[in-house]
Image 1 (cartoon, rainbow, N blue to C red):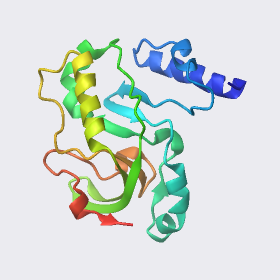
Image 2: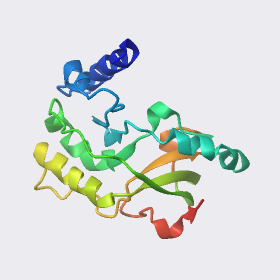
Image 3: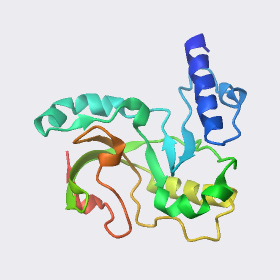
Length: 194
């Protein structure tokens, strides 16, 4: 492994420890040579996966579309898959502090890219996102994480959540993407394929 990759892994391990997770750099350094970066699951308000293979190539291919529609790419280091929203986890924040989160070791495969617009109490929003191919595998992983965190008895999983990665929106900040909630779930049907 090159020293640049090792330094990134060590920096990532420090970030994880900063979130109260017990991960050592050595845990992440044991990846086979050439396997790419690991997927990293973190709890920072939301439970999310930072993919080891972020879809920056899709962002590059769609740059003309983004420009025509006044959208801004979300930076590579902010691309993530929301597993559980912060509103769901907030009541359990104290009991989750310091608990180890099992990491997602499966492949993340990207599917269709969509554009979605929504008006609401937070104003007009527009996002471009890529749906994940294996929704079932991610949903099963969320169940495993809830069990590992001791929350399996709680009905926390957002059953209508469509796992995806927002690629662009009007500002380029993740909090400005079209949101998902049980009250107004993001559905593929209301989105336009690109």
